[in-house]
Image 1 (cartoon, rainbow, N blue to C red):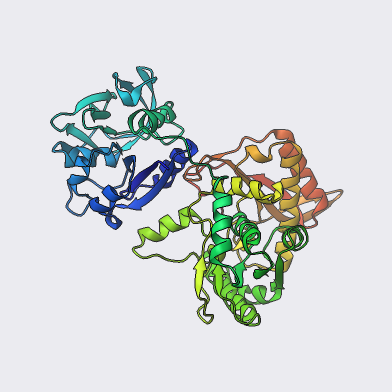
Image 2 (cartoon, rainbow, N blue to C red):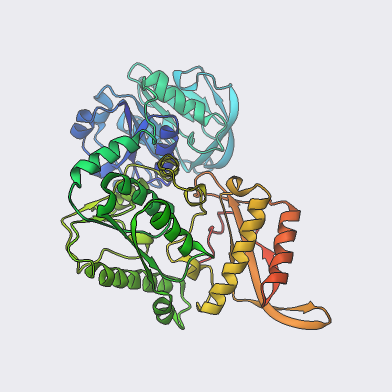
Length: 510
């Protein structure tokens, strides 16, 4: 199978680049620049290399560099942003700081004829994010694009199949970014469109059916998309030898725990143990208001519960986790292979010995995991469920977490979700939920004054969650949600809508 190596130099868009490549049905993997050698790249059988962006300046000694011998392997290279500047630097060009010429955001770019720009009009909009610029391209390179402030917005040595763009073709703001990446993959690297997440299923089932034959497997099931797909896949491979341990910490959305239990115990026939630990978690959270402290308490307590319950099951050979590719990439940046903690909130249980750990989804991005979940027959409601933070509603209840606040928020969130879905907007909105900010305000119901909770509604639309626009929901949807919440949920006197994008805000409130 053809494949592309995304060589990461510390940029925020490394995963987005790899996703864009995979969306075009070409397999891409990410390696951090100091975790792979030229010799390993040569032996890896890659059809092409992509150098990512990064926050550094190439002329600083402490900045990420790479062996310039990589340019002599005969493998096509595409440098993006910092990767373009690094390509120029390695090939003998010159990069300087643009004192008055830095560019950020949407910028008009003019391109010249080039294999990279085949089918791209002479003028279009691209997304820039740079302070440095290529002041002198390397010998043998031709300048193929420019903007008003950047004289070298793209360059190439077509004979050696080396290309660089100062802008970001992977972001949706670049009008013809998809065409540029497609040209590189198919016209320059000559890749075949062979990668499909769905085709991953049969090979994975066959692999684990052999590797795990006769072994008991324990999976920490959160009910999230990743762990649910991992459970369905392993259930198909090992059947009754799979046990799923579902720790219900009482911080889930309305009806969520029951839905998870029904899905896996009844519909899939998987051996599932549900631990109702709400009281235990709420006791630990009593009086705690600081967001990070909440997260640590929930993570630590989850591990303690998991250890206690797993110890009751006797000897289990294998621990399974719903680790996906972004988790692997982030762990690799830290310098050591760190196993993903369940629900992204804790660490591995230290008191339980396993022969091995399996992570069946470690090669897949979230959208690929969803496609696999559909192929495995998981309910659409589960596969396409809203993204949910590991600590659950504890970070959507600002301030101290109590059962009363959680129950109130669950009802408000369920109403908002129902109204969005009834309007047919569910899949078109990337994430939508309710928040309890901990603010009380005066109101009036009938002839009496009230003093109740304020509930904030949040909806965002995004392609990658690195940036997000607040969603312009129809007024009638917001009106209906607000009316129902104030009428049906006792204790709420006001509903507000969050219209802040990311940046400057984040998607979640805590």
